[in-house]
Amino acid sequence: MGRDINLTVKLGGLELKNPVMVASGTFGYGEEYSWLVDLNQLGAVVVKGLSLKPKLGNLPPRLVETPCGLINAIGLENIGVKRFVEEKLPFLKQFDTKVIVNIFGYSVGEYAQLAEFLSSASIDALEINISCPNIKESGRLFGTDPKMAQEVTKAVCQHTHLPVFVKLTPMVTDITGIVEAVMEAGADGVSLINTIPAMAVNIYTRRPRLGNVTGGMSGPCLKPIALKLIWDIVQKMRVPIIGIGGITNYEDALEFLIVGARAVQIGTANFVNPKTSIEIIEGIQQYLKKQGLKDINEVIGTLRI
Amino acid sequence: MILEVATVVEHRHFVASKAESFHILKLRSPEIAVQAMPGQFVMLRVNELFDPLLRRPFSIFHTEKDCLYLFYKVVGKGTSLMSQWSQGREVSLLGPLGNGFGLPSKDVPWLVAGGAGIAPLFFLHHYLKHHGYRPKILWGLRYRISQELIDFLSKYLDNIVIYTEDGSLGYQGLVTEGVEKLYQITKPSKIYACGPIPMLKSVYDWLKNKDIPMEVSLEAQMACGIGACLGCIIKGKEGYKKVCCEGPVFDAREIKWDEI
Image (cartoon, rainbow over all chains, first blue to last red; front, side, top):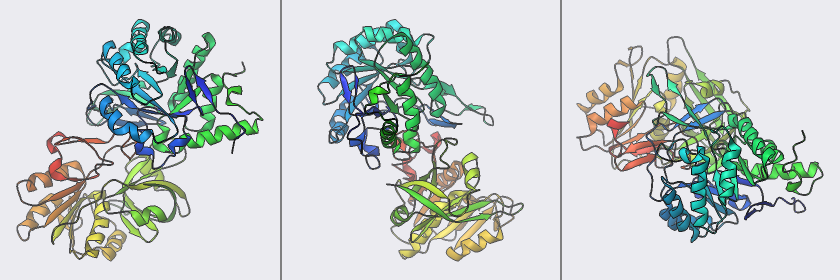
């Protein structure tokens, strides 16, 4: 099916066979879902955020469900970049898909070290996380200040030959300022949005429902917010954008592409229906066929106003 | 690990006034049912909408040929919607997930349940009997259950003692008191427990200095059920443990009970 339809998209120095990836933190290190999802079909797998050293993560409880949403406060628990390369990457490399590694550090220097270390590994791109709401010490600070965002991005780009994407928080007054700053620093593109800071309370114990008190909201309720932020960027500049936020089906994905994202990431929906990403790829193909189109790029950024 | 569209074959509601209500859902789920082991669970999708968003974890209560049974209580939005399902409805199931119970080294094991915590122990009871053991079940409830449920359960279970907090069925008191009393007469080869955390803690506190193995089946909020989201961790003596794939059955001595 769809051999005559082109789904290939280009994002800076990264070419994907289709615009559908699975988002960091929602797909483990790939192996967890490989029993249910044919990884060969995906545009890319973005692995769980990695730090230089293994990280334990936050105290439980770590999850709260809300109407059409999920608040998480995992706290970037991960096995560390070294163990990832030794133990997890070889498995992922068996598949015909791009491997994007999401990284986070506590200082500009740590981001640079991560970039350097991963550049010798067999991966396809880096995604810099400067937007996790669950890490007090770092993360969001870098993501809300254009100067800091630029500094981190520059440090990463100077230490790697790999394409670099910067994952952004929606919690800024002017998203375009941040995008300009990171693109100037050498990024190949941006991915947005990360989760929105959120919390929930148990009224009987009067305690927060998350061990970390606050967390980050994901899920279908985010989609309109994400679309609007991408639209803000698209109106001002032409940059490779990876759209993220509440995508659950091919219609959602197409909304992002029409607004101007060149690719999308599927996050929380993986938990609900592990085959979401595969169904989206098929759905996009069908849509193009029905619309009499032969190339996904004929849809990207074609919002009619 | 299988993602399967199951079909509701039968849905029984055990409701009576001044009684604890439970529901038993029988699903035709051929691939999952034949693989399931006692202690394992399924992640069930409540509907095709996204509210409620996440799948719900349920211990497997019983299997019979190509069908599996879930035993549940209405506690929130998900189970409330489920309780309205009727025959023929299609349901997305992911399973069987997690690690099941281990066999005891000798007879007689005790199965200690609180409320809906009977679910995995019912399956285990059947399995142990099949392997020649003579398990005892101690089940704690807040109030009585309907006569229909008693009749249903007695078809499968023998050697069951019920404790209710208000004394409306069986012995009055907590199941943990029952465990202590029974221990004065006879000793278990192993204890299997599932129920609310305070109950599990109390059984563990009583047992920890005795030379009796104990396995518990734990519950946690979870999103994926397969070890990817890291949302369902609990504190173990050797660090965090994922309830979904390192459990839900744990050796009770591996858990940091005073910190959960």
